[in-house]
Amino acid sequence: MGNIITAEAARLGRMLKDLACAGRAGAVTLARRGATFSEDWLLGKKRALYGLAVFRILIGVMGMGILAANWSTRLYAYGAGSAWTGQHLYPGSDFEKIWLFKWFNFVGPDNVGFTLSYIGLFVIAFLVAIGWRTKFVLPVYLVFYVSFIEMNDLLSDQSDNLLRMVMIYMLFADTSARLSLDARRHAKSHDALRRFDRRSRMVRPYTAMFHNLAIVVTTMHVGFVYMSGALYKAQGGTWGAGTAVYGPLMVDRFSTWPEIAKIITTWGPMVAAFSWGTIILQMMFLPMLLNRITRIIVLIGIMSFHVGIGVLMGLPFFSMAMIAVDAIFVRDHTWRAMGRGLKRAWANAARRSPGVTLAERRTTADAVAATPVDDAWSGAAPVSPVVAADDLEAGVAPVATATDVDVVTTAPDPATLWTRRPAESASRASSPDDAEADATDRRDDSVVV
Image (spheres, one colour):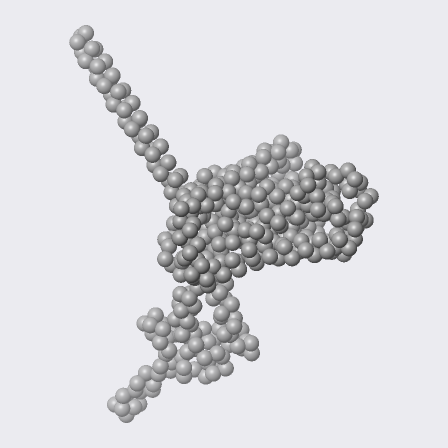
């Protein structure tokens, strides 16, 4: 009996030892794979190039929108007429105490100087939106935008704080690699690009690392903002009761579309779903970015939430700033697909005759759909069938085709529809962005943290 117990104990010890060795080997393998993945993700290539380009465009458009909306009241809201706030002598923000951000506070009492600076900031925002010399213009835009927006602390909101910090991170990222005049200039100057490529080959991994680290820091920052907002909401009684959305939509100060607000808040379960869904989306924002399906759900939900705030509560610039940051998390492949869809829609609209009615377009589409599938895939225009002489003698009537239908003569020529696909293929092949998209794989380029 003692020998059996000793043998089983030895067997148990060997099993535990094997499990410990296997666990240690698995942990080492997992750590090695994690290190390899992190190294490849950080140093391999620059991520989210299209998302960062959309971010750059939106913050430039947002800056122009703020300046244009406040043009008529600029002197009273920010200039010499805002002396009643006391912030010219006693700034409410610490940024006004830093020499780098004191320009607008310095020229504020002078109406002419302030107006010229105001127009200059508008021009800088426009240059940021179109992506002209972004590496130099973006830091200038950051300094002067912060200097301007902090002149009157009463008119700022939380989007200004988030945007200011994210713009600091974006100084280390390449925000003009796509959808910019910089990218267009680099694509045309091949010789200069080759020389730059040879010179930057040694530092390219480090530039990619700073670029991708800026995305990671932005992701964590936005995730913490959403999570802290969700925790703060969960402590409120109205959010817990599911009625929090109803209050702001019924307040005259925020409800810009009271008719739409009444329709949305008519059904109680919908109000509760919006209230609780907001908390869930904000709380689970970071974890839901890790999977493609959940990422689509959370991005559609969170962007719809911001669009609703901008439209129904009259806070368009706040919503635009948040959507600009969230655009970074959309895959490059998705942005390219949306761009190709817009190009096709624009090309179809240009080819479409303005005098053709909707009923005629549908008739033409039905006639084209009646063409054999093989002809449709081959891209050839439909032709009338050849009728043999024996068939004519036998009295066989020829089969009418799409070109023989009378209604087609009142609509655009169907033959142009058959040549559409080759033309689109040629246009897509001529685009440098689409050529790059075809050359690269369709792996997930979104943020994974």
